[in-house]
Image 1 (cartoon, rainbow, N blue to C red):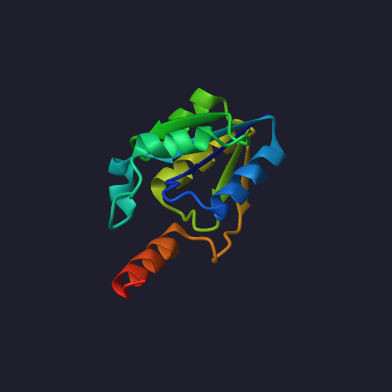
Image 2 (spheres, rainbow, N blue to C red):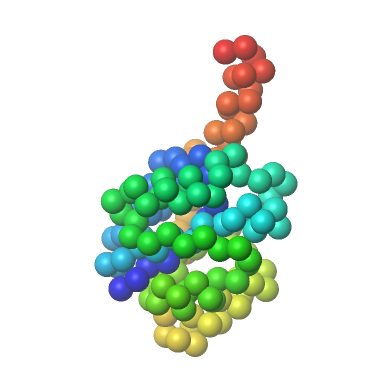
Length: 140
């Protein structure tokens, strides 16, 4: 079974690793969609710190990840078809946006599963970035 998940994966951390290892426990192949800077601009105020190609390289270095596919628009259906996803793993912040509902409807129509997981609030790229800035400003 192919398990697919998506994210920005900027400042890769243990929360990301836990997500990807969970994906690996659900199937044989883990495919990861990585948001391009253009896509990130659509829903976050700042682009990633780590360039897309480096984020891809870091993910590919993980033993629990088999395939990494960048996505350049908020259309998850195309990549789900490309990687032949059987299970799509989403976070609790997924929401009911049109592009999200579109892929949900597509996967359900194909008899595929959607698995929603909870995030660990202690593991956030945003929080890590804020700590780095705070320590820098404090002269640490």
